Length: 214
Image 1: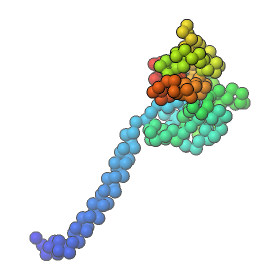
Image 2 (image 1 turned 90 degrees about the vertical axis):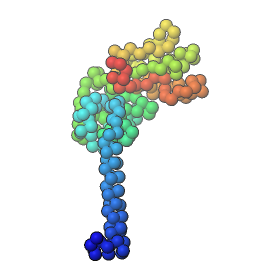
Image 3 (image 1 turned 30 degrees about the vertical axis):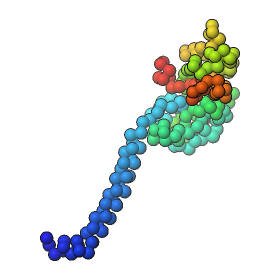
Image 4 (image 1 turned 90 degrees about the horizontal axis):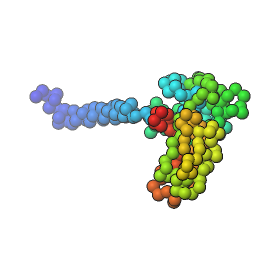
């Protein structure tokens, strides 16, 4: 053992350096784990505003400015959260608990969210052709299926995508449904939650097209 090494052992300098090196390494490791963890968080398929159906185009062009959310007259747009995946965080998603999309039919120039987007991450579209998602009904949670006579969702649909079946339970016509979310917005199944034990969402919700089996 050299005299220098022996001195370092006696004085503790080598140990001090080792601790500092360890601390630096630990911080770096935590940063790498954090980045790695973020990198591998799964990206959830989200319902996008009109013009945002090209997922790659929207994510690459979105500035997270939330102008689309601010101008939505129906309060139907909300920012994505980290649990939706890192790439989706603060990108626009449809929130039919707060409102529904009428594609700004009475607004000149079409959907206001598209007009407000500074980067054209929301592309110009033909509103009559846009499919945001598809409505799906959970009969176990539906008040009509429990004989409560509810047909709020059917009354709210402006696109003839919902009708009452022979048993008076709503039926979704997936060909006619464009995912506007009016049915989900007006569904009262959760406001009468005591009737349906275990319900965690409204009885009718809009899901991405691929999740509806389309």
